[in-house]
Amino acid sequence: MKPASRERIKEAAMKLFADKGYSATPTSEICRRAGVTKPVLYYHFQSKENLFRELVREACSGMIHELTLASYRGSTAVEKLTDVLTADFALTKRNPHITALVFRTMFAPPKEMPKVDFVQVGLDWIRLVEGILRDGVRRGGLRCRPHEVAVALLGVGRIYSISHLVRGKPDLDRALARRVVRLVVGGRDKNSTGR
Image 1 (cartoon, rainbow, N blue to C red):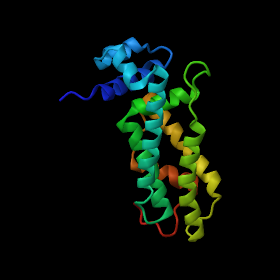
Image 2: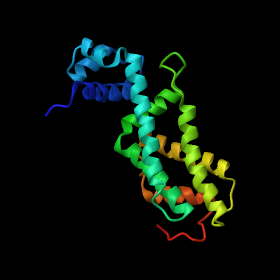
Image 3: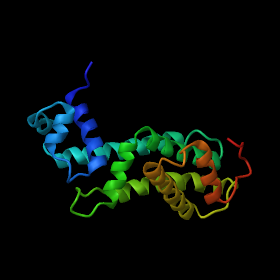
């Protein structure tokens, strides 16, 4: 069965926006790829800008949801951080168009794309990781400055994700997530099981 027109529009737009950018993607091309007419696109989204904003908002909220679920898996702070970073990497590998769209939007010239508040998304990511770190410090398993380490993990994770998108490497896997966490956190916590 063919996906509903709304989902086909979103899928086509996501790929085009990620590959070509917002400004270089005409609605006619989105419609052609999705197999719909312009009135159908405007019925569902009212404008290209609304379509773009919905795609970005859904991608960001889905990412935070998956990372939050991952944060419940491990038993120690280091394991939880590794699980969160592994889930973050898995999102990039599973749907590189979403990650490319987010990066393209973050670094686009001001008038090329509609304004999106990525600061809030970054703060949500940092708050999640900082909470894990604070708990690790409180339990005595870690010694660090939670906010600084959370920011560093976000930064290093983003650099590896960009490298993967541009060069196809490194492999964004659990082993890399574990190495990044150990590097940034400064070793393993004393209760780690080595997952």
